[in-house]
Length: 129
Image (cartoon, rainbow, N blue to C red; front, side):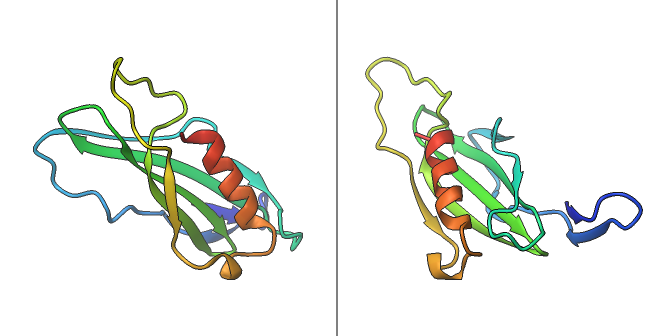
């Protein structure tokens, strides 16, 4: 949930964020939030705090990259970076390597609120490898 004006005048700006990407999995399924991904800051200076939240999921039988998502919630909407890689805290068995984490934004950089794209990308690179 994303709310503004906490206290007596709180308003809900966005109801639950859902991940439609989860599909039935016959292998090892994992889904969790990313520690350190929940942050709130008014990066565009409009008086509303933009909140970030990250999560990852996998459906696999062996070690390797997982699905990564980092969302920026702002004024009733959201933008999101979706990609593959590892959490910075994940360890793989010796001899297993994966390419660096990559992402694709849901909308072009020019459509993100001013000052939020760069900060969200920096957080993505901090959380994921």
